[in-house]
Length: 452
Image: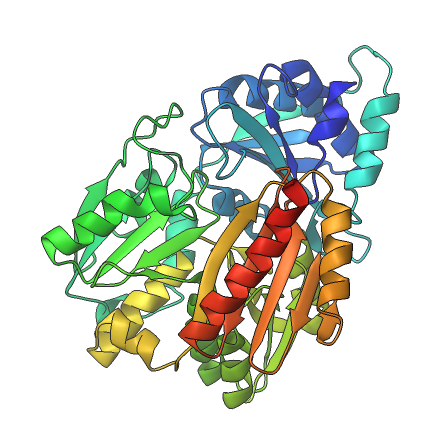
């Protein structure tokens, strides 16, 4: 069955019409109920052209399994997360392929674990069991009848996000916002209404064809327009979201992209000022800036493998107040350890307004860190490359919880297989610009040598 390729580490993703279709989605919904035993489930969807058909199939599978479905409509992923814990539901399903190109779609899941806590479903957290159930599922008739209800969550959601900051202290600010025709525009128009902001909107119209650029600002090509716009209009800040808004990215007033781990460092400082001694979880690709500032602020640093399912689980286990990833995911204990793509900009705008400093100066105050942005390499034998890299850099401090991470006194790197694409992803940092470039070239040449 082709569907076994769509069960990923953190969620389900596949090309619509080839790997994923309404029948498979219907079966996955039934498998979700069998595994999670959920009785009341929130369902939402993003703007993708295939989302309505997949959502209908998912709801059908849930209802036929006796579930009370609460349909919250066209929403961002973090709205499904919020609605699920805020409304005390048993689970949540979001129809989305996050930042992937328009031909893809998928699903993200929440369920109550054995301790009665909401957690995502991923590899090691139920995804393997759901895949097995789907692969062994036989055709069956309609079972116990469930129901469908609708819930307007927006008022509660907007209040929740705004309550993280003192919005009366934000502004006046000129902010460019690029929604990429995903869900960002719909949320932004509700969330920032009435605030002391001059918003310059880009591609706020929801359009699952994504006619202007791919909904993935992590890729430099997709940030070119917002960078140009920030410079042209003299904005204080640029904000860009991926399609379902579980990731958010920032451009400073000079048009410079701010690495996600530096944002994690800033937000860590913000939360540790509020609650000294708290734990912070961050992914192992992150800049030394994150660890350094957590320690400076008397926090407790915890590294974890990449992926929302793992970060959320680690935050819960360590009772951490905040978590962040290089990829633009940010997680909050007060949001049931879930990520949110709008709380970070509320906090950054409050920082800029209160400190009366441009974002570039606030970032500079973190210190000198030389980060080479994530680079992908297509290789035929990923395991062989990782093994040879481990042999080559065996004198460093080695961590293998996610690919291969190696740390030396003056530089470190992580090379890991993508959860969704057939590539190796390299992240590297050094204590000087020269060493950063030198080591990047060294590792790149070594990886490229396996292509010959």
